[in-house]
Amino acid sequence: MLHLFGGLEFHTGLMLVLALIFVLIYEAINGFHDTANAVATVIYTRALCSQLAVAMSGMLNFFGVVMGGLSVAYAIVHLLPTDLLLNANSAHVLVMMFSMLLAAILWNLGTWYFGLPSSSSHTLIGAIIGISLTNALVTDNSVVQALNISKLIEIILSLMISPLVALVLASLMVFMLRRYCSNTRKYYYIHLTPAEREKKDGKRNPPFWTRIALILSAAGVSFFHGANDGQKGIGLIMLVLIGVAPAAFVVNMNASDYDISRTYDAVNHLQQYYMQHQGVFNHVIGQDLQPRLTPVAKNNASSASVVSLSVNNAVVLSTANGAQVNGQVLVQGEGAPSQTFYCDLSQTQIAINCASMLLKNLGSYDQLNPDQRLHLRRLLMCIAYTSDKIAKLRETSVADKRFLSNLRRDLLNTVEYTPLWVIVAIALSLSLGTMVGWRRVVITIGEKIGKKRMTYAQGLSAQMIAAVSIGIASYTGMPVSTTHVLSSALTGTMLVGGGGVQGKTVKNILMAWVLTLPAAIVLAGVLYWLAIKLI
Image (cartoon, rainbow, N blue to C red; front, side, top):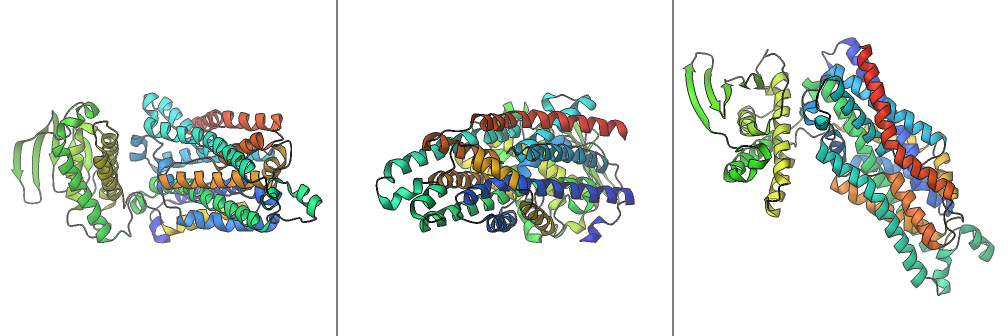
């Protein structure tokens, strides 16, 4: 693994190590900040003792990260503007990452200290927004284009709607349990608090099947928390590695020839699709996606064939080593200068041709030089960005949407990847963080939301709804806040289950919910601006 970092200057390597440590610290704080939500109910219903509950949660967080996939990881990464991702350099990425992570760490530690169950997801996303907006202001670019707006809207809606859905569903579940499971002695106990059960029967633990359900639902919350929140750390580490050591990480150097052939086939199938659906996409790019290639001149040389083409008023220079469009390098050869790459939707066909040229008969990415690997990544991301735009058109049928989604997965198969050591490092950091610092937030969840202690039914309803909600979000690739989902679900059970809620605590949680995003935006933006001024 260490050979992948060969060639880095000492100070760059040192800053890379520090950036990776910052990510791991952020993930550890996320562990004890968010995992408290998963163990609070089993601790306060006495289904498990605190030590065993935390150990179980830590283990399941680990497995959640390892088995959770990468869809959420790259959903977070693609919240950044496409051009920023395509042209990241080591200094830029390090400054960006340090500012982003420091802002997230400071806010998470502050809310943890006061026992407020605020969202690590909100914090991270706010920090990304702050970085993107500040970058636009510093570079005199459009603030409107500073963010991947469509992805931002998706994520914000996911973060805002999921707690409300959890509150309603958990309330409904408690209501149904009270209506249908309270008339017999067998089910009556589910509506008691642990103290009431001990006073009534002298038993400290929940009824057997209730206890099993509480433990399993807590296990589900922990596992899916790892699968969802752990992926955010994975995305951050990959952003660092790709920016600082692009030669080794822009594509999966361990990709098999089969994986590369899948990517090549996806590129060619997209080309065929665009040719068959030319007219549908005019309002996306302002002109046909399939430009007319008109030969202008041809010059046969001993070393390479050079063809100049006119492409919708853009001049394309195509050689054996690369291609340029109006001076913008699409595919670079050995020793070619590094230039800024812009993802122009009107030139998608050119990008497809260049990517196809690089991938044809390619058995290993070792056959490409570092510049070619970097530009292949840029081309594939740009092509995928175009396919996403097309898939969202009203004119695109459901079958075509599914077809494009499958092609996108194959297209980015060797680009959106993660080495095993990154996954394990994040999993360990999250699970070890779970073992410490959880007590402050647990007390808030267990004692300060409801006016009365939670009943078995309330704890079970909140956890089951949270586990299902976070699991669905992880499967669909949408980041959600474990904190807000579970605390909202528990609030709903308290409103319906009797006793009501403590207004002060709920007000503080709502304030943290409302303030986290703007506070993280401002904090990350200020840190990023200061860092840019200092370097």
